[in-house]
Amino acid sequence: MTADHDGGGGANHEPELSDSLKTFGAVLKALREESGLTQEEFAVRVQYSAAYVAKIEQGKRFPPTDLPACAEEVLGAAGAKVLGAAARSLTRRAGLASWFRQWAGIEEEAISLYAYECQAVPGLLQPEEYAKAVFERNLPPLTDEQIERQVFARLERQEVLTTRPNTAFSFIIEQGVLERCVGGSTVTREVIDHLLQVGQRHNVEIQLMPLRQEEHCGVEGHMYLAETPTHQWIGYTEGQRSSTLIPAPKDVSVLLQRYGKLRSQALDCRATVKLLEQMRGAL
Image 1 (cartoon, rainbow, N blue to C red):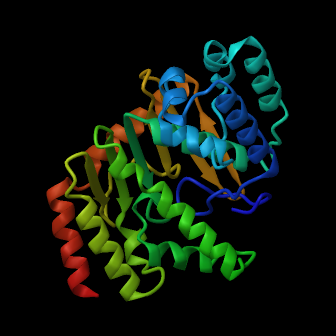
Image 2 (image 1 turned 30 degrees about the horizontal axis):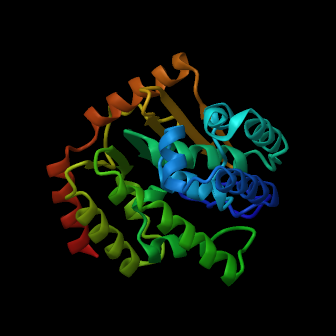
């Protein structure tokens, strides 16, 4: 998204860089280099991945709230104080820009990641032409340059599927999302082929929710859930120009109950493959 637009985890926008995030990243990089550490060395000491640290330094990810505290032993009291001041000065524009960057960081470090989508193919599963078709239909319209940046950012996010082989991914997608044929039959065929391919990964489960399902507990909309390395579950939802991180255990418990029920109501993985193949043949 642009700096003052909404959208994110599911089907809408990827956050573009903000000056405040780039400034924070530059401060972190300077402090790290002053301590004589590479990104990899620093990442190990603060217990985050090197890829995540790199994206924070590039201004592409909102830093976790505990980063200054985690870095104190590495950067020293003075360095941690500077980093903490930089964190407090970050600009939180339009809510989602900050929320989604936090979610993107959680997404990259998650050991389990669940997604139920009833609006569009989940961002992590969108092939390039589908992502492009989604952004081309954005209102207000995006420029060609903005679309290119959004698509690049989305594809970059998808690297987590290959760089996190020990993360358990589960996706539930409404059949109607594919029946809509966003971008046309050719794009939809590419989406189906992509789902069939990604679904072959041993750590990825993709299930379709059939058009007709009398027992359906997903009527309140889509949801995303992630389990952190410390085994804390966090939820994420978004709507029209708004989004919410859900960290409270009692609220996350509700989402986990609903997601578990949705898994039992959706087609299993084998039946999903069969339906996808049938849908592809009908295009």
